[in-house]
Length: 537
Image (cartoon, rainbow, N blue to C red):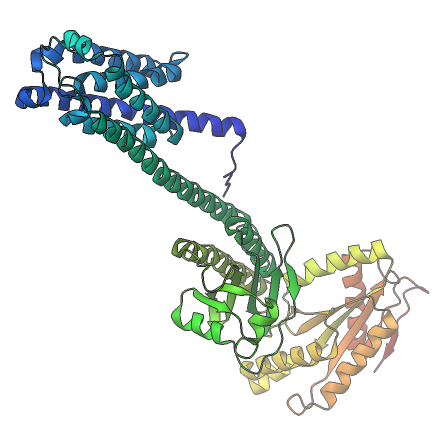
């Protein structure tokens, strides 16, 4: 998934220009509506507006031709089309001033069209354009009576009588222009700001989704989530804790410029009250402050936090966690908008989904590397790990040992006790091997009744001690009573220089143990002293 929410300056300018062009195109509908309303009023309310359709028709046709010409020029995409559209805006006001003059300017029924024009310009062009238009409207309303232009306007329209506008109503009309323009500009600015904020949050959400899609580790996913929350919402601090297996794990981030840091989650005597509330409600919970008594873990991760939003996470297998973000501010007056709370839940949900996918992928990879019967590594995993460890051993010049075990007389166990009993023997021996080795060692079912153990950083002499522990464990095991094994031990670089040679050396040593009477181990001396082999039991 490729997401690129951040546009370059050129791309943003091009996008803004296209948006402005579309909005200016909508002004054509407003202008056509103004013309239609004026003509209909001239037909049905001639006495109230001071003119009839014959008076205003030619003038409206001229205004319409100017509007249509500007729109045609815009649609052709000619140079300077935006400037021409802006130049038509004052002409709109001139048209309205002229058609309202015969009935007394501010007393005209058509004066409401000024409000329509101001609202349209403010919303479709810009807040500044709306305020400039209010200034231009005010200037025209003052200019006509001041210069006694009412008679000339009447002559232009062919109207014999022109009503004089009262001075008081002119002032009220101008105040109305500014009230409409300022209120529209204010609410338009608020809406535009919220729209930009929502677009930014959606862009950050898309960026987070693209980032965590390629991550496979849970701590990396939650780190990306915390960084994204700080960037998108401007939180003071944020933290997350969740269960990785049976162990709780935590991350905190202190500021937008810092990186998330792992934190050891303390073992609390009881679960946080805010966590229980969030898990029960299955939705974000808002708290004014975190209590050390009621919320020991949350208060430890975000000490002295104020106005905290707690978002629950419900991962697979009933494993739970919470994401916390500090909004800050005065606990009594500062509120987190509901929109932010809902969007925050979307961010957490994406991270939760990514963690689920990462766990499913890890489980699938684990199953692909595990022998289904015994639970230890399978042959495919053995080959991959052996190749990797041989390469590492060659680079670091550290020893590497390999032990191959074979269960003695396993066919007889199957023949006399049945295959189910044979399976139990295989599982039991796999458990003995797993208990006898280190965490860094690999136990694998090599094939049939044969098992292999890869021992990194282990000399042949130390590998012999591992074999001795395994044989001693078998002798003391009640479940595997009477069972014995043969083993072959080889090491790098003493007995081999490649994975294939190391397996061959250990296999030859195992064959020697079986040929020598079983229930014993043989230490390969394949490349020293002429293929001599040392054995023991």
